[in-house]
Image (cartoon, rainbow, N blue to C red; front, side, top):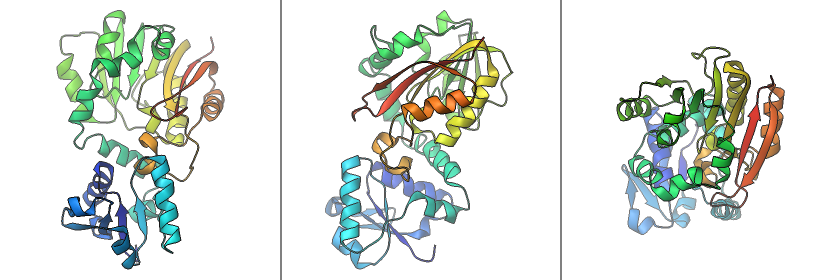
Length: 311
């Protein structure tokens, strides 16, 4: 970039984004952080954390890295009212020499490596698991429709869902973009002889056999995936399924800002909707069985879609 940038937000997501771009050799583009708690945080890795007034005095553009939707709107208005600019994710992607989809995918993966132990620990708590597996849960009611003869769990993380279905399945394939997660699952489920493991590229299932699997599901992960990656996945999921195979996907229903990225949307949601997902799935050859819009901290933020490959 011709000039440097101010990262607005010195919390977990903002610092993770800085670490990500520093890891990719571009940490020097960040001049400082701006945060309302500037008097407490003071600095991040040698970069000053300053007030909004001081940040404006530098006459540099802002990159917003906070995830509360209303706060993002307020900050954008504040920046524009001050006669300053904010950068979209696409501007940074150009500097990396990558397309937006790839950069967003890479940052999402990086974010889920950095300091996520506490997240995964919390995700294993009963209250979090009940969302998916308690009787009457919309997830569980739809999950019951799947044929578990040869099932894929896409973006399995550290395997929190596996204990709920592994003994009901003849064959399980756990897929994740992070080798660290795959290694943890291998150790965790080493006594289970019906599980195979696959560290993939984050947008297809190229190493899995065609027409072999009876079902696939993905919980609390595809909500972050870029729309173009979801389309690539759907095409390949169709390929690997047997005729009649079913797919249960938990995805985003967020359409408020098509320019936003994982770095600055509510709960890191991608631009996607119930209807767009149905369109993509249909174009890949699937039939839509059911879709249910659900709340996730924000009203109607997500959707659960059950689709199948026709006989």
